[in-house]
Image 1 (tube, rainbow, N blue to C red):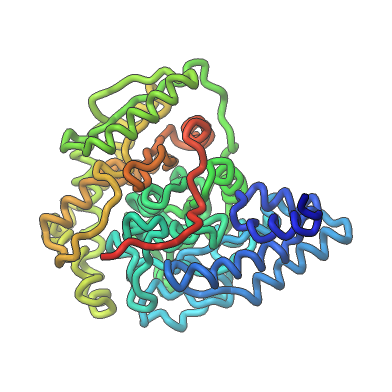
Image 2 (cartoon, one colour):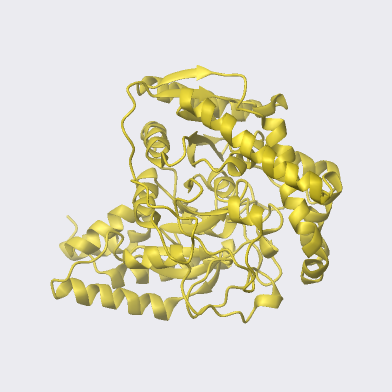
Length: 482
């Protein structure tokens, strides 16, 4: 028989293996202290990060101070927040007060933030604790998490090296147990891709659901950068996503886009799900289709009415409109941005602009009108099908072949995430959820829904997770060789 002290020690050593909601419950009940939670995660970072290279700045002193404050308040009978003591990482392009927001490049190495971004502030208000910044590509440009300042992050699963991007640092940190929640952002799959590659879950919320701060170097974002990128959480369980969602939703005077909308909408008498395995009809890998079939079967068994449909609305038009808006706004700024990047980090955007050159004013204005029409058509579609089940990527997680990125490969990688791209243009919510590994590589799907019905997406994702199980954290971190 193990002694009570031995049992407590084992629980303490494994605390980074708990879900965020389990950690918070243990702190709120007094079973464990926030200080214990933080220390076990700092030890996990020290053990794992030299291999995974996901955490770029470890905030040990401030995390310990925040934990001590939580423990003091709890001991004195004061209330503590719903995420009390839960450590989270923050992508390198999201502000943490007193810490440099580097965007992964030397130009911003010393750009220390005066205040927390709205999303960090909301997590702090719930007594979650920022434990570190997390790696990303230079200025988020490119799908691979490799920055000038911090190098490449590797996937902790060991079967592939690529953790995806651009929130790949947060995804790898969460998947390996260095943090319970990651805070990233998504403009076309940047939290959903790392969730797929890491065997974890992620939420890309509705446009206007979370308040965000996306100025770079103090410059206000242009229209596409106002409409498309959104901050979103990554976590090991859908329950944790729901907990983060409840904290992050709301308004902040710094972001006029954020609106006060109830967390839950009315229940649906018939929860219909449209299955779109191959958006745009460009092809889908058999392993990806198998993952979608698995999720569809689970939802059917859970009582959803699951129907296969040909496509979501206007996939090709959505891709063209997205590309026009992005490259047209990047084009004038590119001469100033290009010197900040290496050849490798600049190549993705240069190839994208070759494929879809920046438009003239008339074409750009037409793209803004086209977006409005595409959003309308999606809303009509979602009136019939409140949920959509589809791929995060039509290609399974894998590694870059090491060759220099060329135009054909850049286009192939972009088109694989076409459902992420179009849904980001439209601004609807999406939850990425694992469906289990295939040949040791994590696989998953995404569930999209009506605007401001994250509750429906999360409930459907929870049904998938209940059948598949929670796959992470990865205990024995041994990244695959190149």
